[in-house]
Structures are given as C-alpha cells and as structure tokens.
View 1: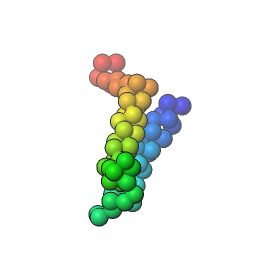
View 2 (view 1 turned 90 degrees about the vertical axis):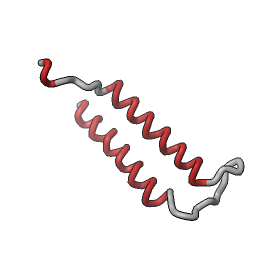
View 3 (view 1 turned 45 degrees about the horizontal axis):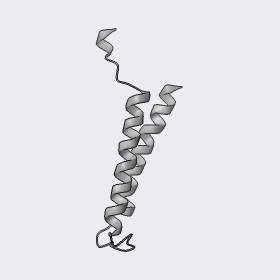
View 4 (view 1 turned 120 degrees about the vertical axis):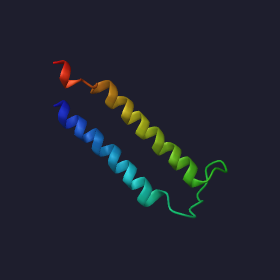
Length: 70
C-alpha cells in the first residue's frame, strides 16, 4: 500500500514541476497580478510551497531505510 502512495506522491511532484515550467512560467507573462506582484512570482512561490510540502510529507510517511543495516 505504501508503495502505491509513494508512487502517487512522486508522480504528483513530477507533474507539478513539469507543468509549471511548460505552462505557467512563460516568458513575458506578467499579468495577472496579485497585490501588484507579477504572476510569475506568486505562482512560482505557490508551486515551491506545494513541492516542499509534498517532500515533507514523503519524508515523514516514507522515511529512508538503509538496506545495508538489515
């Protein structure tokens, strides 16, 4: 069960990363703005927070186990 959840978490991070660079971060895309902050900044900040949160969840739910210690 954990293997399936791990694969889903990894897939979500990869899809989020690829989608952000292909579709969201286009050159010259400054509008819309949120509180006079350009689109690229606040969307990049949001995506970074989501990736860091997914990494945190992955490290807590699926901690690294060294196979050599077994």
